[in-house]
Image 1 (cartoon, helix red, strand yellow):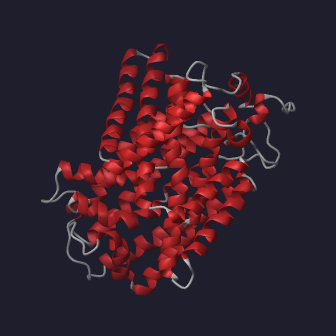
Image 2: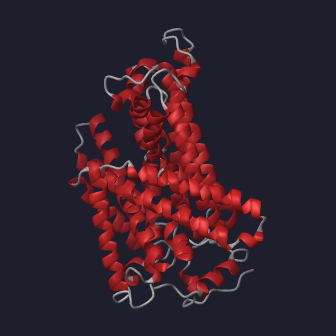
Image 3: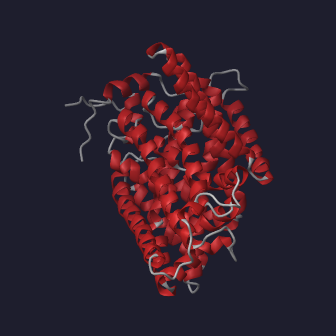
Length: 464
């Protein structure tokens, strides 16, 4: 039985642990939206010279390196905050704030992009309903569910993610039936992984595109304080989300590549939909498309939930105004942040998707690189816990992770550097104000939180 928590205790400002490992995995998968493989297949296949599964496999390994770094640090520091927390612990509070600030580009704009793309597709399927109505249909219920607590959000998200996965399974089954019917062109399975048009350079470029499909695995770390036994479940959740997502991407793209050998498409952007029409007919493609779009509701739910947690941790520390960003409602969720993200989603109707996407990529890959550097520093600082050989081998992971992240960062469009650079400058200004011209330490919640959190990890009892 745990003792009551004083209202003014730092532990009272900690989110409540209600999620298990399954809930964490479903949130991560919903954030990644594995069904996106059918939308991106044409572009990845075209870029790789007709070996999409190879590109996705390389991307899985590449993102897996950063996932390992996240998992190591999540086990060491089971507090919410993601890159903001990890970089702050290892590289100092100033760098921690900047890492959190740039990853905010991912967390603030990805919900907007997810809702907007979802609404655009639904509007195309049902043109009689205006785009702005679809935007409201996506944002309002999602926001209400998230305001009512993480347990409800977990249940709703789990069911929508199951439906999304079922849609992918049906798609795969239809393609397999088509491939075995004798109607498909003869194709060697090995050519789906390597052919005469393939090179390491083309696969590298395609893997850079495919890697964008993995954005969001890091969001699992923002749920640390709302997860039971976070030292165990968050690291496992991070790794499993990448492995499950990568397996789905490679498997589905392999079947689609067998169905359409080579990387030449009349329109790569709709190649996945076209292949579904060929394999199962127009009616199947339309119905499956609608089911997938409805199921993708869970993606917006997960993205809004995790984004609000990062804002909360930064606000709780006082770097952003605590009275705005560091508040919890009766359901112990950061309600103001949830509403802010919903408002940004509404504003998204007036913005360009390409620019918003550029912002997302800039923040994600830069923050990923900083987390890998932080992991390397942690490994070196704790080298007395393991042998020299083990430390050396373990250090290879974040080193390779940094190299991959910086390569992906270098592949971004010029727009990303312009807009992302402007956001970074704004962050430096915010940091200067918060530290009175860098003369004071970066604000932080009482260090007592860490000791209380560690002591409470095995003791806190949550009433259902």
